[in-house]
Length: 174
Image 1: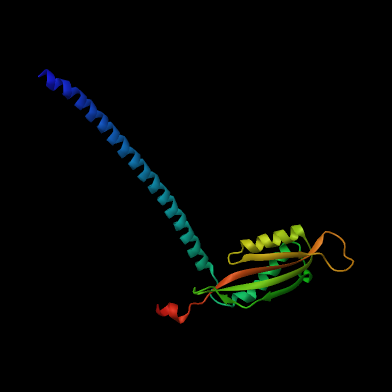
Image 2: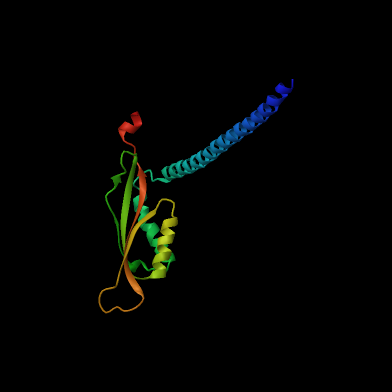
């Protein structure tokens, strides 16, 4: 009986240590799985936000080219609000629309040229146009005025663009 008690205590202690080690290992594995699941959850939320953003962009895309004519009026109105006279707007030129890859959208850029505007006027105008539902500022270049004009005014060229929704026959049938 004494002999049985002699090996029973070390065996029980060994089993207890093994149980603790096994539990610690299981805990660490569960913690790692929870961290991976949390990271995947964050990635899914980010992807859902991207999908929502893209679907909102699609819903605000222009559905017909008649909107292009109102773009000049929008630019002129925004410029007037910024203290830019219509005489300072040299040109508003719509460029050729181009299909965006295989999507049902065309990108329609419009090039705008201004003369003798101050930087605050230009920044305010670009901000107003950027906040318009359909428009995106794509580039902006500044030039010093020609001739004897000295002062704080600049000539500027910039491109704004918006989307036109026009599905192809393949998209209708697909």
